[in-house]
Image (cartoon, rainbow, N blue to C red):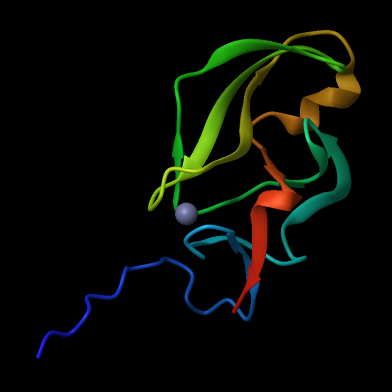
Length: 116
Ligand SMILES: [Zn+2]
């Protein structure tokens, strides 16, 4: 008999959270660290998190956004490779109100599922 090796997730104690819609890999806690909901991403509603797990960060690149030009890197599922959103790697000067986003993560809500 062959027992399936469990994927070691760092946050199994989470009561619930958001996961990859494709592989259901745990990505983010619900509520507690969600900095701001109803954030407008590229494809509709996105959430801004200050901590996510089980993602792979791509190479940083410059991206022009409605809030200015920022350095971002795409983040994707460590298991299946689906890209959910991006991380703000650096915020160019300009609106100081945008600075809080540095180091935070935008996840597209439509690509997430609720997981337990
Ligand atoms: Zn996945």
